[in-house]
Amino acid sequence: MLIVDDDPLNADLLEQELVAAGYRTIAARGGEEALTLAASSQPDLILLDVRMAGIDGYETCSRLKACEATRSIPVIFLTALRDTFDKVRAFRTGAVDYVTKPFETEELLARVGTHIALRREIEAHHRARATIRLLVEENRPARDSMVGESPALQRVRTLIAQVAATDSTVLIQGETGTGKELVARAIHDQGARHERPFVSINCAALPRELVESELFGHEKGAFTGAVQQRRGRFELADGGTLFLDEVGELPAEAQAKLLRVLQEREFERVGGTRRLRVDVRVIAATNRDLQAEVAASRFRADLYFRLNVFPIPLPPLRARREDIPLLVRHLTARVARRLGRTVAGVSPGFIEQASARDWPGNIRELENMVERALIVSRDGMLDGSDCFAPSVPAPSVAPSGAATLEEMARCHIRDVLDAAGWRIEGDGGAARVLGLNPSTLRGRMRKLGIRKSP
Ligand SMILES: Nc1ncnc2c1ncn2[C@@H]1O[C@H](COP(=O)(O)OP(=O)(O)OP(=O)(O)O)[C@@H](O)[C@H]1O
Image (tube, rainbow, N blue to C red; front, side, top):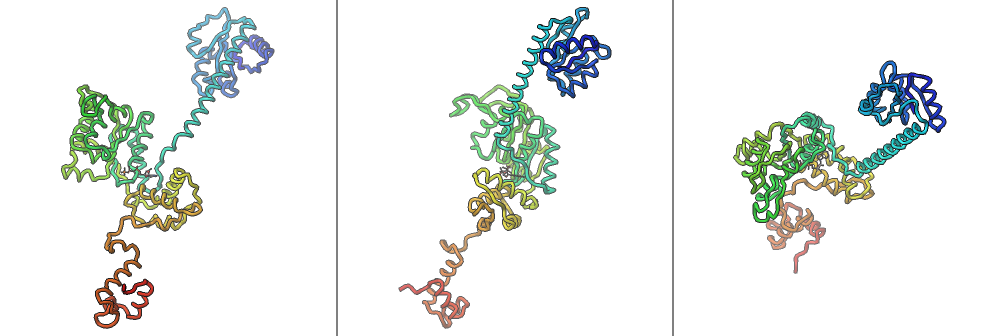
C-alpha cells in the first residue's frame, strides 16, 4: 500500500495501523514522489493526502489516472476535518473513496479491505477476459496473407497501403486467380473500416434477374418469390467495404443503378420507394480489360470512370516467377492443413518444374497442382513429376481411344498394312510406305503384337 502524506506523523500513524493489520506499506512525502513510486512499485492501493506542499492531492490523483502504468490503482483520499475538502472534485479526478482524519481504525481497515478485494476481483475478471480473447484469436481461421517478395508484388503492397488510408474507390485488375480478393481484403483490413463488415459479391455468379436484388435488396412482393423484405449487400456493408468481384459481368440495368449509388450514396430496394443512405467503401475487381469492354459498348464509360479512381493492376504469376518457391511452400502448408496430411518436404525438382510453367490459372492453378502432388506423394515428399500435365490440353489429332504413342503406332501400322493388302516388301509394300526396312517393320509388328486377322 502506498501512503502519501507530507506530514510524517500522520504517515507513521497510518503505517502502524496498516502493518498491524497485515499490510505491507511504502511511503511518499509528496505528490511528485508518489507518482514515481506508484509506477515503480505498483501498490494495490494508494492513500493520498489532499493538502500537500507542491502538487496537491487532486493534481496527483489526476496524473496517476492519466498514466498507463498507474491508472488502475485505486486511490483513497485522506482528508482532515479542518480541510475544505471537495468530495465531488476528488471523485472526478478518479478517486474511489475518502477517509476523514483523525480516522477510526475499524472504518479505515474496512474501506481499505473492500477496495483491495474489489481490485482483486476486477483483475481476475480482466485475466479471464484476456484468456478468452486468446482462445478466440487462436481458433479464428488464420487470415490469408499475401505471399511473395518480388518487386512486382512489393509495388502492389505499396499501393494497398496508400489507398487503405483513404475511402477512395479501387479497381483491381488481374487475370483469374491472381489474388484479387486477397488484395481487396488487405485494403479493408488495413483501413479505418476494418472492424466493420467486409461484404463481397461475385457479379458473374448470379443470375441476371437476381443481381439487383442481391445488391440493393428488395421489398416484400417486389417480384414472384419475394415473400419477404430482404436487405441487399449495400445495406449489409454499411460502414464497411463492399467488394464487387467480376464487376465487368454486371448487366446493363444493374450498371446504371450502381452508377447512381456511387454518385449519390443513395438507392432504393427493388420494388421500394424509400431512399436508403449508406456509407460504403467500394472495391471492384475484374479480369476483363474494362477499357476494351467500354470501347465495345459492353460496359458503361461513366461507370468505368467512377470505379477506376485508384487502379491496382495485379501481375500474373508468370511475371513474378521469383515468388513461386515461397508460394509453393505456403500453399503446401495450407493444403496439408486442409487435408490433414503431414508434409516431409518439397523436392527441388518440383520447384524447378513449377517455376518453368506458364500458369494461365495463376495461384489458384498452382494450389491445385500442390494439392494433386500432395495426394499422390509417398512419405509426404512433394515430388509430383507426374502431376505436371500440360497446362492446356493438347489438341486431339490422335484417333479416338489411342492414348499412348504405342497405341497410335499400332493403329497406324495396321492401317497401312490393310491398305497394302498386308504385303510388307516391294514397291507397294507397307515397309516402303512407312519408310522402314522390311526387317525393321517385321520386328516392330512382333513387338506391337500386330498380326493379320484370320
Ligand atoms: N500472393 C498470394 N499469396 C498467397 N496466396 C495467394 C496469393 N495470391 C492469391 N493467393 C491465393 O490464390 C487463390 C486465388 O486468389 P483470389 O481468389 O484472391 O483470386 P482472384 O484473382 O480473386 O480470382 P478470380 O478472379 O478467379 O476470382 C486464393 O486461394 C488465394 O488465397
